[in-house]
Length: 447
Image (cartoon, rainbow, N blue to C red; front, side, top):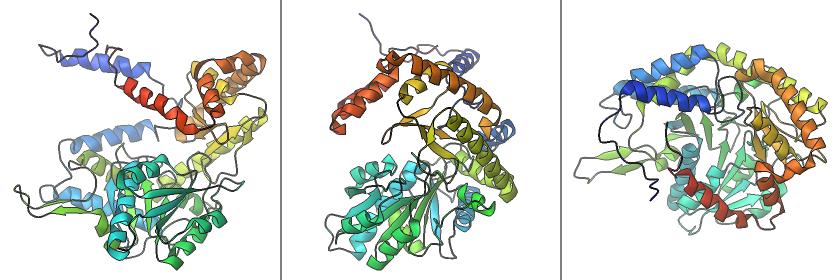
């Protein structure tokens, strides 16, 4: 009988052997360190990575749940929130918390508005929020978790949300409007002031999802890039989400959710006074909160400072310009007019999914997107030394796909091609559930 279950070993393995196995596994994955990935990992420099490890390890065992035991963590988090609020246009009344990532920040914001509406608009029995169709899936997840109806507004030809469509979708049950700064697929910023004006005139919330852009857009604006208004300084914006572990270059597990004031933030908190274990209060989803992520986020902001982030932003945009010019020279076009260092590129009469497959064979990890069919790059300083190599490999991959159209029937290209032809996208969901089940299969043994 083939037993794929993994059992606890009878005797422990030497730590040296385990660490060697971990390193072997690590080295077999995509090489993010050398700029071979364009998402998932945000690497500023080797020096900064080592600094993050040290900062995190100092607080490796502490728990951010109880600030009375670790008052230094209370100070770190409060200062991270304050710095972030000041950077993102918050006034004296702005408030917020740290979270474990963008998804949790978004979950907390939606939970906050749901609970706010229960108090301020008790007549609403079935709350609704209106979002652009390009919004991050975390909003779909939040709607599912917290029983808030999600209504998606279509995009204009420039891939920004259609304002007239949003206005028509607002009902007496609407508690929240949402815009992105920028949206992930195409890197464009939704018309935030107009959305905020609609929200304010109706006495409802307006959330800006700046998980990707929150810690680079302010610096691009300082550098003179034409960044439209997007933050808490916009009249009518009542909350924001922004990830420190993306373009803030903190360690994983660090994001921010900000509110216009403490009164709104209070709806995020959970408190329980009658528990046998004593009074309990929690700011966000988890109980245990890894202290290392809080400490490392604070340390990162202190280490880079404004000058450091300006230099990072400058490098990101220089790299982006080189990449955009390079892909256009190969016959691709940029999707929309992205404001920052995220963009999609597409081509007519060419299966870009097959191109991505060929690039993956060359050691590159590129996200594949739909609506429209395109490939996606999120650019960081880690790509500086790899741009010429990437463009040469892309040229070769492009030529191979043009001369071998049968590649469209293989690998990921075949799967994405099939998905594009399915009349109802929900028909793909069973395959996605199967994929999730397979993620937890132990048939592939550890080294």
